[in-house]
Image (cartoon, rainbow, N blue to C red; front, side, top):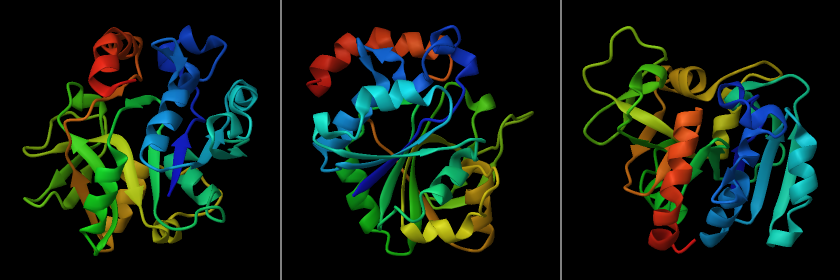
Amino acid sequence: MQALILCAGLGTRVRPLTDNIPKPMGPIGGKPLLEHHIEQFKKHGVNDFLINLHYLPDKITDYFGDGSDWGVKITYKYESELLGTAGAIKNFEQKIKNKFFLLYGDVFSLLDYGKLYQSFLKKPDAIGMAVVGDTDHPWDSDLAEVDNNLRFLKIHKKPHETLPEKYKAMRAVYIFDKDITQFIPEKIHYNLDHQLLSDILDKGLSFYGYETSDYIKDIGTMERYQKCNDDFEKLKLQYNL
C-alpha cells in the first residue's frame, strides 16, 4: 500500500507558526506532524509514501530525505503552481500502483488504517472511501449527504449559509482505487472534496463514508493546532505513541 500525503499548502491560517516552516512540519508533542503521519502509517504496513511540495519544500526534504531513516520510501513532487487536492493525485498518477491512502497533511490522524482498508475491500463497487463524522466547525467544512449505508449522495461545498438537514463531514482521510485518476483533469487546479467527488457522484460511481472513534484532528487554525497539542499527553498513553 501507498500513502499520498498532501503537504503543499501555504498554511496562512496558522501564521506565525508557518512563517518559517510548512504546516505539516508544525510540532505536535515535540515532533513534526508529518513524522507522526509516517510512523502511524508504518504501524499498519504502509512504507511507500508520495508527498507533494510547494511552500518551503526544503524544510521537508532536508528533514526526511528519501525516508530511509524511517525504513520507508518517499517520492516527492514539487508543484511550481498549486494543483489542488485532486490535482496532486493526478500529478502522481504514474507513481500510483493500485489502491492508495490519501491524507491531508494538516490533520493529526491516529487512525487504524488497516481497518479502513478492510472496510474498503468489503465495498467492491466503491472507487473510494472517506473517513466521515461529526464536526464542531461545519460552516467551513465541505459536507456530504449520505444514505443509511454511508454511500455518498451529494457534496455541499463550503462555506454554508444554511446546513443540510442530514450530513457528514469529511475528515481529510481517504482510500482510493487508482481508477480515480482517470476522472481528474491534467495540469489544472482541481479540488477533491467538492470537485472530484461531485464529478464521480454525477457519473453514478459509488463512494462511501467510514466512521471511526480513532482520534483525528484538523489543525487548520491556531486554536485547533493548540488543542491537538493539549490532547497529546493523553493520546501518548491511549495510543502508545
